[in-house]
Image 1 (cartoon, rainbow, N blue to C red):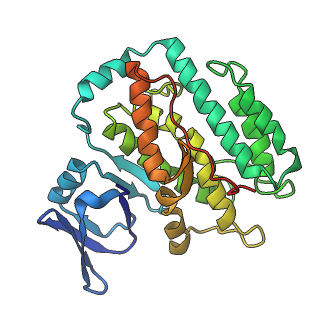
Image 2 (image 1 turned 180 degrees about the vertical axis):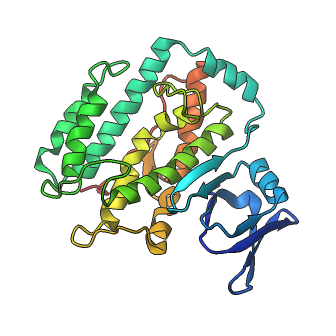
Length: 303
């Protein structure tokens, strides 16, 4: 089932009644409700939002990712359920005991999928884009040749136009803020699905930063980043770049979970694809599968 994403950018009171989220808007006094089990992500982006403990408890019980934003309106916190699967302890054990060769193979698959999707974003617009296709075919186990980084240098040089002078930096000029916000939404979605598949988002297959609580989410979201990039590419106006994330831009970025992707020969919303990806990863850890299921762009979507 495709879950809903709710964004709150104005003062509001959030409480619960009969397994529904009750929303009271301060400015207008309007009252709305939403079925909690239908939610996937809830974003709180205003300092005058009041939320009850009962709401938090029910959101986590239904494995809803709860995101809080800072004073710059960028996501700064993520709250997830600690008990997302009935076989969680068993799956934790498989994940912890995963061998180094297995992790290297999984990272090879991840980088290959990411670079191929980067190629799809540029294909048809950048004549030299075939170099990314060749890169995607040359990734070895563990990516010892650092193909991911080489592809990234080429990709970011061309994605917004060779003459744009764009460089990818979290605190850089537009459209970096759009990318940051989109990646934060994607990261929360991936982390939520990892928990739902009984996996520990902290324990990565490649990322190992001791200060990062979502190393595995950062690993698995890599092949999905180009879908965010393509959306940002459509939203970004080179002649009038957005220095402020408007409500309209945020609303567009919240459509990330429903973007069309191709997986297993069929078109699917991105959120459903992430669920299948994390489920396949759990099976790779327990030995019942050998390949992670990653999506590609729908035919013609990148031409």
